Length: 297
Image (cartoon, rainbow, N blue to C red; front, side):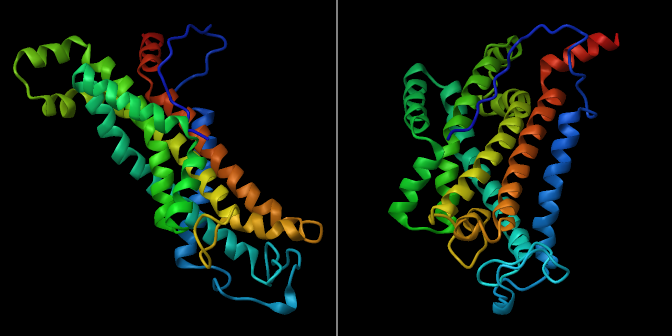
């Protein structure tokens, strides 16, 4: 499993079939709505939840949705809606933290490769290719197996796995900016390399990196759920959608809703974040912005 790389592609589309870019983009609206639903569950769990995390009701094990338990209960009598809300908080936290780790590693590496000589660039590219050769989930499993299952290890493992794609995209995007005339003029005037990166490179590549961040978040959510399903993610008692799926598979014939709800939560999160990424690309892509200005004129 690896993060998709967003690269600018020049395409010619007939006006009748071209999707209208802008903040009213259907992808952006639907993706934002789905993601806000997940965020509402995660943030809401900080203030309120139907039951405590460790609350169990042995007399109400594997009961269906009811007024007392909106999403039913599991085999231990725990409220599934409570687990779902707290699992959303775990998914959002690990997703955001993993993306932060990936960008903290990947962006400096990509800028280093794009702004230095051929020897350093080739060395960085070799490291990136080695990391990309390992799927994100496999790399995370290896690190978790070595260092043990914990939230910190899961975040670090997922972040390192995703950072290679971030570094690759940063290098490609920054290299294109370095060939522009205004960058050459800045170098001729004696502008320091760090100032060129801050003033010219980063402002021109951040839209592409923002779209990549949304895709990386979706990959991180899937990786966290997969690790938890395999027993290598966030350890109990912290809830996780992946562990909810793993615990519910033995009772799927008796309580199928216990499998459907966490699976639907993962699907909604990933679909929402990918639609959001597509919508942001429509808004932020320079080529689409130029086409929009030309159409307005």
